Length: 331
Picture 1 (cartoon, helix red, strand yellow):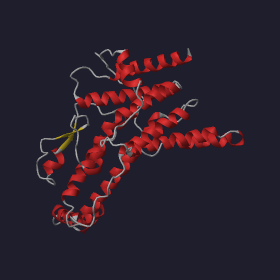
Picture 2 (picture 1 turned 90 degrees about the vertical axis):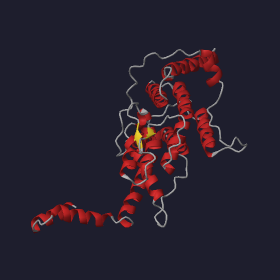
Picture 3 (picture 1 turned 180 degrees about the vertical axis):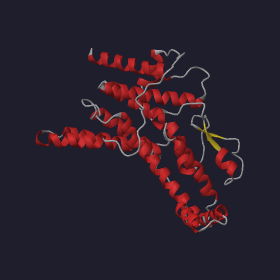
Picture 4 (picture 1 turned 120 degrees about the vertical axis):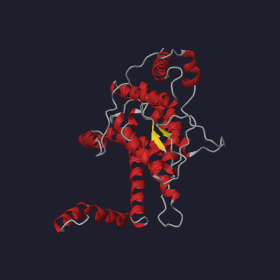
């Protein structure tokens, strides 16, 4: 009976997820992807808040599996400035000036643009502009890289691998802190509190639920059991070879840990902080890295200071010493 009840609970959770996450017919791909990922994220947060270990573990597996194609396209944009999104699911799209000369004003402003007609996945909502700037900065840097020693650093480790490995490390560390008992009990609580503390990067209010979900189509429970619950979380290597990819190995490690360790204690760290520390932090670091390289190129190669001095001289005209000192401090 216990096994049957557990099976029924998983089927109910999957059916609920399917009814909420599947988009209506003819929904644009970017909107459908965003809605699906945001809904799964909300469900994980709900199960965590309700201390439902089975629901949390199941939805986390589905979320990790579902987000992989999205992260693959996002990684190519962050690593190479390449928009490889055949399904049109990303929040970045080619603009009207995509074929203009790289480095021109039109290409920078209108070469690649944000999709303002669709919502971004809730956990990426505050990063869209920074992510857009990373890709177009990389295009500009790569286009002007010939003959310069300041090459753009590589982003070799797949963002999906960084995401899964970081999340697993965080949950392991928290589990170990909570397992400390006896005289170290107080210290364990302090460790969990410190572990769960937010970073200086602003955290979005991503506990809000999707609204105005209308015309969600029904889903057959049988199809859910056949297509989802009967299969483990998986990420298929593009080579389809016998050796596992690093991404598949990371997913397998997370699956194994969830089966063994996450059976009695649900993670204390809220889902928004798990995402912040395991995914958003890596995107932020990449953005800062590319921005620094662009500033160095502007300063050392393109001699932007010289251009600024010329602009300052034109702006000041024949102004006196007081105005000159004032604007010197400004510039």
